Length: 136
Image (cartoon, rainbow, N blue to C red):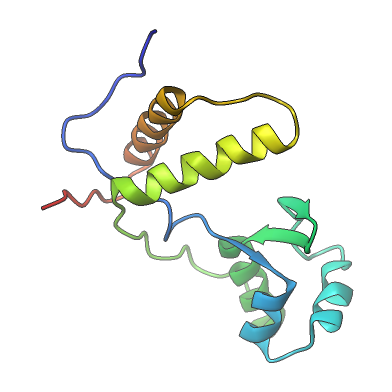
């Protein structure tokens, strides 16, 4: 099986970089009810949801944070600080992506393929300038 190229020692993590949040997390962040968040999420300027689960819609946390800043101040936010990452967080994200595909019947991703996806995500983060924290 062909494997994706790797970067020696590169270990960025996505757990801090790409998080999904639901109405409950947004409501807690803003001190509002989940129902009010559902109303706000219907606005044209609210970020589009990443997907919908049984518990409801989910959004990328960084997009919601940008929207909150703009909603409260009326100005565009500055780019957020880039977090250092580690391989365990990237692996966790790769597993969530594999679960997403499997749940929708798009594909079943084997463990060795999750390793390849992890390598790809690691390369991608390095390419976009995400700082790398080397384990140990």
